[in-house]
Image (tube, rainbow, N blue to C red; front, side):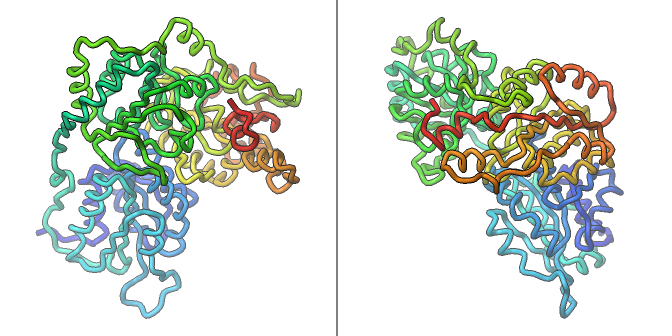
Length: 551
């Protein structure tokens, strides 16, 4: 048997669970645990707000696929996590958050609260450990639950208990208990029906979701789409999977390009692989109104965001299902007529948003600056997408390497993306990460620029600065309401960045991008670009929401 403090045993358990990065803001409830991780060689990054410690852990997961790890103190440290925990739960992100609890043996404590209801209201799981005998199983349960159910799990341990001594054997990690996933073979009758639908469809579209990337089934899905003459698209989390294909139309959903929406409107069959077909993907049921919808997944739920996910669900692994469909198609000649050389040319040449606007001459059109950034920033860079109105424009960066676009927008909160980008940049470690976000979202956690400096994390940040909360601005304008409550001064991000010890620059014209990018490459510090954009440019998504004029 071994002897140590409880917090040391928990730190050892986290190491054996494969934790190699840890994001934290310390207080009484987690400071000994965080210190123990540092002593064990775990790369630890100290955030300036608890929200961002979790956001950084989410970014780490987005890059690596492994559960992210964060820690905060109890009470007011934990309450700061409400928005980011809910976002992680909605996005099905496996996350382990260690927190303290108020001491068990004190009659009263200023930070005491019932933490479980808060965590569970966010959609996360709470595991409280109030006895030494529960520690091993409690920690292991947290990692098993997070990995198997893909949800955030918060572990709460009173900090007087953390300082007790524990006699223990070696910790057995959850990876030793996780079962191998058996292949799920689809039902023969379902395969027959889908094969018949695919062979008969005149305008089929195949949509790949995150499950295709996770299962490594990209090539199989592409081959199936080619076999039936289908157009290819992806959900936002799988953006970029098929950018190298002549008949790929990009993202399916509210952020689809104008050209893609026209193609979706023609679809008579839509087959989704590894995609939940949430309200985002189907644009609240408006994207492909004429299509018969088939969903192929090993998670057979029928309803998502209050709507049926499809007309037919085939429960099965993607590769096994595609093999079965290919066998049934045999020598049958598909009836698809949607693919043509002319369509491929239109897809390649189509502007992302061709609507005309009266932009101010001294400010940039976000479509133009995104096109320039897309041309200058190498395709092997990782792009982190912020939320809000401006996010439409950087969603349409093209021909990025598979898995290099990160967008976690669930729960509709702005302000998450700076933390997420820091987590990605910290784990990647080479400075080849670009965050694109709006000014409103960036300002919400601007203090994390100090985290970049103090942790020597190199990250390029482009702030699309319209001096407003863009979504609210455009909605209020369309409704004929004074938009003053959505407006604020155009903040000087260049000066703010320099004040934090980072590089800062203003982008006044598209030609500025190349020299500024060269300067960033040659430097050894993070940089913030203040990109002044016109607030007159409305995304097609917003036009549809406010006027119905978007195509």
